[in-house]
Amino acid sequence: MPRKPKNRVGEIYGKLTVIRLSSRRTTAGNAYWWCLCSCGKEREVSSDSLSKNSRKKKSVTQCKKCAQESTLKGLYKKIDHQEKIRRATATKTRSLLEGKVPKDWLKLPLTDSHARELGKKHFFRGIKCLKGHLSPYRINGGCLECASQQQKPKHS
Image (cartoon, rainbow, N blue to C red; front, top):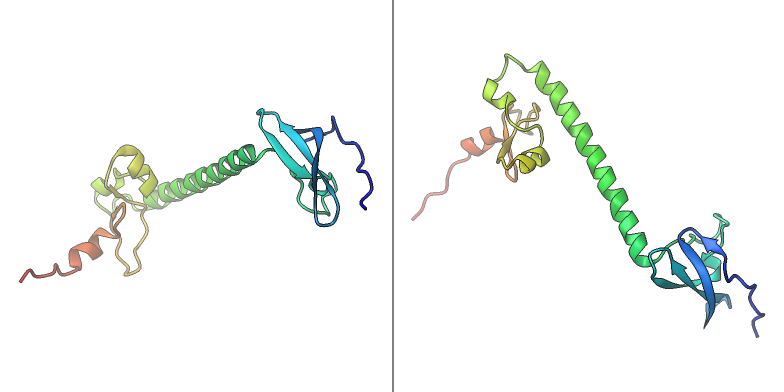
């Protein structure tokens, strides 16, 4: 018979506050605790997941909804950071091409994401495509030079 668990009521782990003992046990015999998240939702968490010891299992510090939201925030932050880098690189590359490419190309958006923001269909990063063309790109297509060289299918 498993021993009585240490009373954790009132302990705080991240956004979770332990409010009561659950009737469930893990296969190893550890108790589950009902915790209240700062957003107001409850979550049942095993006592070994509440541990602050980072060498053990991954700690649970928030309800599932808050965890999902923070994961998405982190993902959006990463995507925004990558887009800033792409735009900075495109700006630098395009500045080296002034006078070497048509001025209209240099007025196009910097990246596909930038073009979508502006409601445009084409963008120019200043890089060559896989076939070596230096040309604007279509948002969901590819190099405009490649597209113009492809033969159009004949209708029969």
